[in-house]
Image 1 (tube, rainbow, N blue to C red):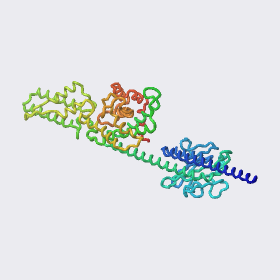
Image 2: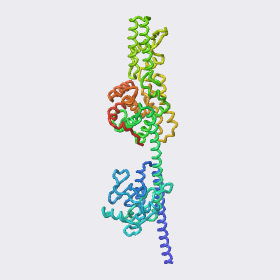
Image 3: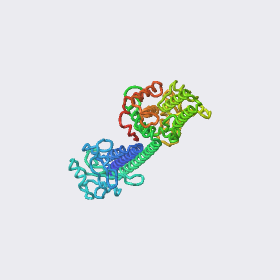
Length: 528
């Protein structure tokens, strides 16, 4: 009975020990599953491919208690080093570390273990590379000789994407006993776990790359479209690129200031990308603006410059005046006065036709006189110098566009809003339509198309308004005006700010930044 009791006691102890081991294994297994799920969530939410690569190596090392880890990407028939970590040697290279990996690419062939895994897609678990003859470990041994390191256990796993294509290889080196720190072989149960991790990571990498490719394609399309619109007229070439550059540069400068109204405003990388996209698309509505309006270089220009017609009329009136003088129907004194008057009209009309001419009261009075002028020719028919339509155009107070043409030009913002609102922008660019269509709004509500005031205007629209205004003033490719110097442009912009049209503090930040004085505006920007 006593022996029986001892036997039962020992059996109970053994069962308890097995139960504890099963319990501990279950806890560890559940912990691994939970950790894999957490990593999977992290991987799917991360869009930066470099950070995903780092996450793979770090988490795989943590799972297996590995001392070192290397991640390669497949490029043709070679493996490119992406991440290289070694705790013993204190090495962290590649990825976001800022330290480049100077090791040469590894050829994909079956003699080296990483090449074999990349080619065959099998998991390789080697207890000690110095006792293994399956592969050529000249590379690791040479590395050991140079650094004093001792490579021993290897676990090499392929990274397969959703299409089962191998896009990389994860190599873990020297698993360690958590209690003693002794280098040990990688436990077989880690093979499936690390393979699962690598597969999740590969899908995340592929998804991130697809998102990046889609964004790049969208950005390229937008840039091509904007450039094509600019190219419709030689007078507007590169305008969009310059506005985009000024806009993003000003927003970036705001990130650096530590005082004033905008000291707490910060544009993240995504917000800068959104602002840049909006700037490239701000004039997309001009696709519907007639060339004759966009290219109008003088007040009288239509399909031709109607000034030529006026000058022809004046010349005919001169000849008729001389003819009447010779025939005796007009005396010499009156003929002379008429010729002088026509010359005075001619000089004035040539000058008034120029876009830079702002007519004062005296000019407008003379224009009214010319409008009312009639001269009976030799047949007794009253002849005029200008028509009502020509009078309307010559009366334009600033620029070259009459009220009807200005309305057509200003409509491009509504078209921009309509086009962009119908585009299925991803979340990152959701505010692009609102920002792009507000670059002609003014703080005092006198802008267009919606007469927004103050805080109703998005900050991106306020920034772009300054960028667009400044480029319009300093551009050397406009047919209706000469290019201004930056100082001349700021004089006009500051008057506009005093009137409450543009944001005074943003304008000061722009001027102080000297962004406009660099060559970067000639190149433009388009980064995501």
